[in-house]
Amino acid sequence: MDDEALLRYSRQIMLPQIDAAGQQRLADSAALVIGLGGLGSPAAMYLATAGIGRLVMVDDDQVDLSNLQRQIIHDNGAIGTPKVDSARRRLAALNPLVTLETRAERLEGAALREAVAGVDVVLDCSDNFATRFALNAACVATGKPLVSGAAVRMEGQLSVFNLRRESPCYRCLYREEGEDEQTCAETGILGPVVGAIGALQAVEAIKVLLGIGEPLDGRLLLLDAMRMEWRSMKLRKDPACPVCGGDGPG
Image 1: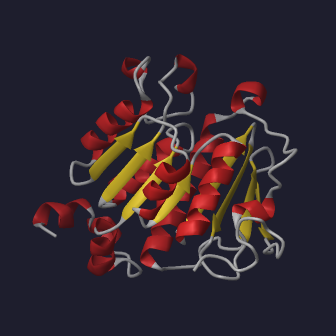
Image 2: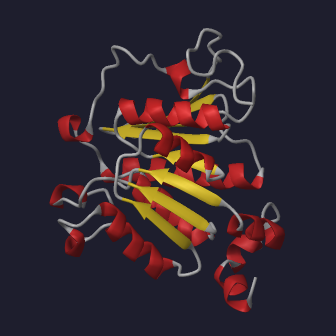
């Protein structure tokens, strides 16, 4: 690292769990963020400012006025433009040392699996079950850790999947058929709630990349913002899971 990088990340390097070696490891890492909405906005911003070497961002949507209450990576000037373009401009201004890659499309099949295989950690910041299930399957198939977040109304949840052979995957937690999917457009969302979950997704991704602390592997963290209460639930691997098949990645 040069002097500019050392100064930029100095407060982070001071942490004994990271230090200069950990900062270099982040610089050598790549993360994939699927979705640049309420979750992906803070997640991408914190990963970029933390010094992730390569950040791949995927979203096929455009910025709408109704997004700005919670999707803090975008602004009024970006309304009507692709979210990936708005995000690229914001992150390039925040940290020019990070390599930014964007894809304004909905990745599916082989393209999704290839994108997942090309990074070190994946952040699911999407807003629908179809994408979550597909992304989980791609992570299981490639053995990549998945940091999953969700929020609606004044509630949020966070977990990390596929770190160990005995760990559950996202599909172990949710059944693909018959899920009652609720969206922010239908039920509403308080901006800081989704922002808090997205920021914590960045925390978990950094922990995974550095191999520090205890990631939420096999645990589901639940936020009730009305009571300002956090609950942690242990998750069990489903031996009959059609995705991880009871054996896990690898």
